[in-house]
Length: 531
Length: 85
Image (cartoon, rainbow over all chains, first blue to last red; front, side, top):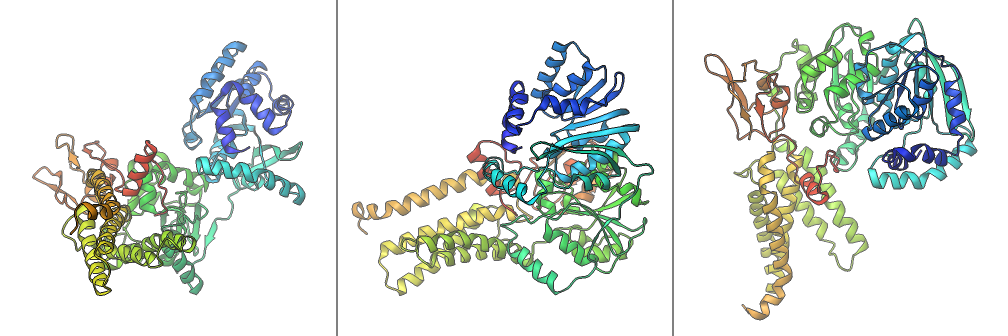
């Protein structure tokens, strides 16, 4: 289903069932019958993502003992009302899928209807692993969900009809829909045997009935290349150049580098492709396990700051990859910069793995691993020397140049082709001098550098014998540009302080407005005050 | 500004270990955590999150001008950065 449509429906519990019926063109009462057919009175059923509770109530009516979970409190309120109206007992609970490990109990059935497609793949995998523990011996899992059609004709029809919905959804929520594309593989990866698989007309809705395999087979772990060659350099160069523009993702999960045994070190990192590559580069030639958390393609520190790199996410990834069955050492080396989002005690509580504080930079990993996990003071601390600033400053500036550069192509008549060059200069100026300036205030930094940039322009324009007015206006514009670029750089540095930036936030914009007003008022000022 | 509740602090040193700027250290006979290099502190929040006694408070979060602009424009806290940095 289109994600946005689902979200709208989810805000209207009473209309959810009718809406889903209209959207899917399916006969939902008949599909519910298919799910229900095996459920007998007295059996214990767990429903994941119960929505308005229609299925849960129907199962309870049959005499089943139903536990139904959802994350949407409005849905749960409505579902409780439905159960009360029907006069049946259903234990409703609010629990996100990522927390399913906390659920206790044994069930004869686990049912999930249109809920797996709302989960991220790594969460789906963790849920399947956790459900094994919740299923009674002989218990069954029934999943009904939207799939990407397999046959070519249906695939094209499906993609064409979904494109607009995807676009609107993405524009609105910056999220995309995730219909299941290879759920059979996900089931077998988690150790399930498929008993029944049924495509429900007209083709993009499918039902699976599966059972945990005993004994539980352990799939081969995915491998990361243990070498580092020219193509890696080229890829990393482009990833680095685009690092302020693109969130290039790597598939999360547990990977082996080389041939690690169950005692080999386990390291954790984010799923930004550049980060993964850098870790891989510094572990080349070693035997190690690498846990890649789904940080949505964002680097370690930013994702920890955003809350996507967390103890919970680590526990989800460990569960999904069945790490505790592959590893005997209950220790994990965390990148030091994830600790503003990862609580070490919580990692231990949730996963049983002790989180060790690794070095800040991946480049220090070889020395850290070779010296019994001892860190030198330099490995403990963030550096921001000239080359670190260039590492961040060059891609930052590239993004800055791109905006006026593209504008200059389209609006060549109004925007001078030299404008992108001034942006480039402004970006590189702050990147080069950030720690040389004797203040932490971006307002002051920006005004100092802006004055320098403006002075350079004034000297150049005087030599060109430009009119005084245009010299003054250029100077003001460059001052404003440098101030804005300096402020914008704050978030890209690993040293700026939150309270300080919050304090100066308002003053930076006030100064910018004054400068822009001055820029436009200058020709008029000249008439009333002719200097 | 990061503040440390000296009565709650048990001197375990976790905050010192997690700080990426070596801004904290343990001081005194019965050691307590002290913010010794406030000029390096960015209020990233690693110390506050990992303190087992919840003794450390601060205005924790990212110091990103672009994020703050986005928050000011949309009027709600932006949990996800728009930029790819």
